[in-house]
Image (cartoon, rainbow, N blue to C red; front, side):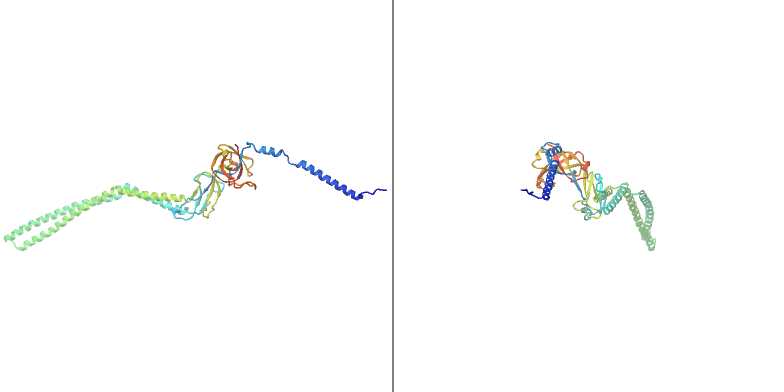
Length: 389
């Protein structure tokens, strides 16, 4: 009895081909696993290489900031004294990234020109009252004194003339009186007629009036001489009251000038300290907002503000060394703990890890960098911090 094959030759070939493919895939999988399977020793070695500090080192997130933090430079309030409203930027004198010195002008406000005019006017008033004081202290001009001296000399010359005229008129009066008395006596004796007596009486009355006028002229000459002499003394004399009044005027003018200069200085925004311009918030023509005019930072010395978990803050002390890493700069930076904060608060630097806690209570620790140059332009950059125990 002949045996029949279990399957036809064509079916056998299909089975053989499929088996070969399966064996090939299995072999490739084993090979791939042996080549690409994770090395159980590598993570440990990498971890050890990245942890040069002790195993109880403290890790935290932090941010970069300049020494003293970011300084928001705003406009000084000039509205109370100058009468102008909200400050508006007229000119910006610096650019972002520029290094500035303390008291260096940064921005000029639109109140500068009217305040400058007021200051110039106040300065002119000071010069005017100072000149007046100098004039009072020196006294009148020599020309005025000489002119008044001439008036005195003229008055002195007029007095002798008036006195001489009085003497002449008085002599005539005395003569007329003597003749009148004589003719009156003769009339009583009947030696002359009444008309002769009346003529002598008329002459006596006339000379008496002339004598009275001469007396008045003498008195007038004396008064004019005395007045001229007093005026000369007043012109030539430097009176203390006049000097005090002139000095008071100078003090008032100086006070007004100082106030005008102070108002003018408020129209210029100056750098409060040495630093670098980090951000300009207001452009020419814009009213200064709540963010101020510019942000300034002392980037020559950068700090890291590390947010250390409150549970580990007791292990952080001033002087401890720290390592700082970040994606924005190569390698790592080193620094020293400079100050440990005194307040516990909610963390502000958030981790990108979705499983990390977002409501951690932390204490800020400031770390002074040994070399600030690589990160001088990276204020507020998020970094990772490891503090050596």
